[in-house]
Image (cartoon, rainbow, N blue to C red; front, side, top):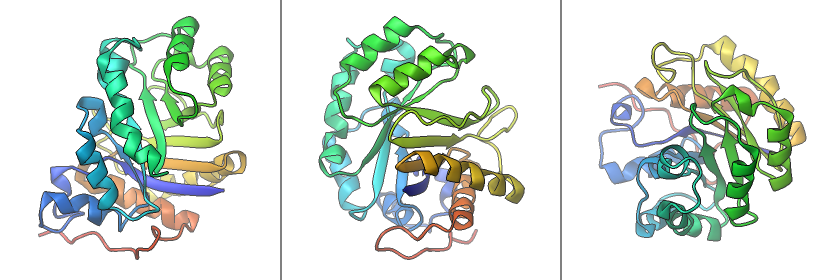
Length: 258
């Protein structure tokens, strides 16, 4: 059993000061790896980086550090799981260095809120994904919360993404060898503009441990990035769970405000 806590992304300008000291942008990932042992890469959702950039991520982080990466939005949102989208084949190439290094936590398939459940279409997409890749699926529409959808996840050994958000209820479902949790927040109008209170953090401790009893590995990502709250909340949850510092690194305190 292993629990990894991190944040959704690391490259936020507003984190300079609250989280990062004021040095070069290329050092932010290295600094982040002093705080957490895993990160969820948001950049691949918007634009696929060249493999050379991905390889640089590996050299700037310790050997035990892991990456999750989001499927491109051209696949999930613009073309609604169309396997003919060129970005899908490019995505495999982009994440291959991470997979080959044994440092791939998961590939996050975040579905759009306007996409209803379609079992044949979902199956066709799943069958086009190379076998053995760790995929986590985030539903954002209530029609997916049906037994048939969860059965499909179990069939392909893909993880249901447990979410804390305004759209769907919290559902502690484990459908793969690993569990995947995203805490978006409940801000209005923006979900992510939210600070989890100490009581809310404490309420997630037994739920994360419940997931860990069923899954070999649990990944938890805070997506409330405003003001660096994801970092503060992520570290608070890690401390509450009694998690050790990232492999080979000590904990650092976030940089004080200017």
